[in-house]
Image (cartoon, rainbow, N blue to C red; front, side, top):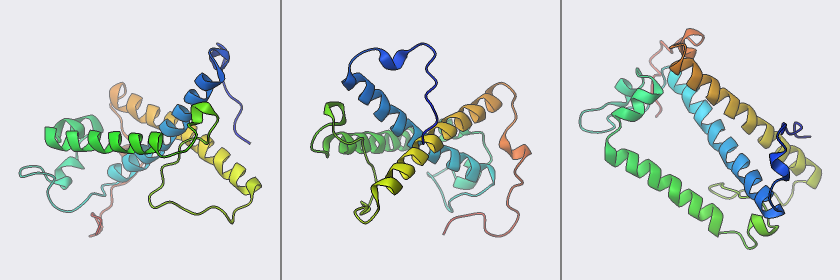
Length: 173
C-alpha cells in the first residue's frame, strides 16, 4: 500500500482529473530520477568511477574527487548538451509512445529499455511493485534533498559515513 499522501493544503483537489494524473505522472518520473540520482551519488561518494577521460583535459577520476555541483560545472558544455538532449528524448518517447495519454485515463508513463514483459505477473504483485516504486521514489527524493542540503548548508557529504574504496577496483569495466 502506498504511504498516505501528505497534502495539508489540499492541492490534490485542485483542478481536474487530468491535472491530478499529470501530477501523479510527475511524481512517478521525479521519483525514478531521484532513485537513479541517489544511487549515482552514493556510488560516486564511495570513489567508484568510469575509467578514462571525459574530455581532453578532464578525467572521470578527477571528477570523482569533486562535489556534485562542482562536477556539473566541470563537464564541458557539449557534454551537458548531450545529457539534456538524452533527457529530452526520453521524455518525448515516454509521452508519445502510449495509446491513450495518462491525462486522458491511460496508463502512467513507463520507461524501460529494453521493455520487460510483465504479462506473467499477477495484478496483485504488480500493484505491490508499483506501490513500492512510488514509495521508494518518494524516499529517494527525500534522500536527494538531504544530500543537497548537507552539501550546501553543512558542507558535509556522505563521505563522512562511507569509506572510499581502497582496492584496485576503482572503476567500472
